[in-house]
Length: 330
Image 1 (tube, one colour):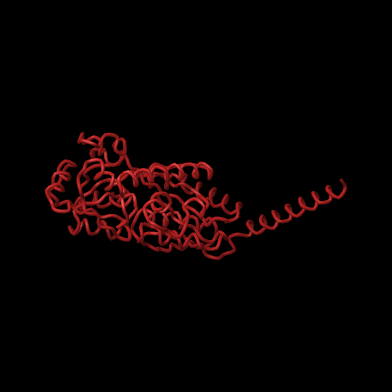
Image 2 (cartoon, rainbow, N blue to C red):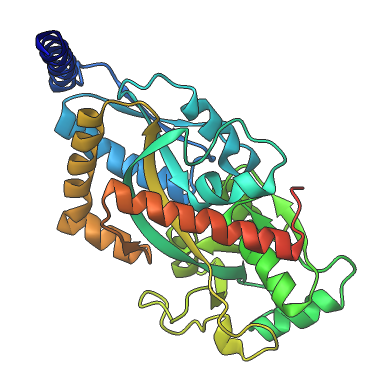
């Protein structure tokens, strides 16, 4: 019995000592070393815009530099895989999205990471519906116009996206599946270059978030056709929802993109907790709340456990659609 008690005390002491070392290390973090914020899309997209806004403020709070590093490709899979292999030391963050952390695992035959197991969630920034846009000079003014024009064109109208597997792509695939109309998907390595080609008339249309499309709508370079939310957006009150079109198969049509921040699995819990708390405080600032709402985003406030449950549900939902619609990676 005495020997057992001694072993227990020794184990507890070792555990406490180990925790003490980790806590001391976490308290010393960050040591002035820059934090890399990986954005798995090209500059100019939603994830990039949010990463730069948050990164600037986070760097000031932590007395270090946050460097935004764009690594686009494969609907966010390329940069996300890089993030999954980074050291779990608190110096790498990954801008995660519905595509990189929910859709791609079912769409691509093989990706180099597990969206659930390879990362630990830090913050869910918010959710964002998409808006279907066309060039301002386009003849299409309603969703009915778009569908009828696509039916009459070989291969259908062309639609850009930030990459295969992104919410822009899946919104198009869902519209095609539900309406029975074909389109030609044109994937890019990010929203920035994709929407520029819609503005330039090289591509007929695009689903994108209001973060990216909003300034171009306000500037008169694009025209909004419909939004993918269940209700109209306060930022675009005159733009109908896809469901409001009343067209066959489109009742209850809804797609929400979302933005989150992750760290490589194994990142010390005290570091994750501090990052969560600091970023939540940044997101709660009136200025940031105003920006998010101006972008058409619905701010989200979740614990790490709640984010994990939310993400699991998203993975299952998109897996079901991809299988039912027979969606393949381009």
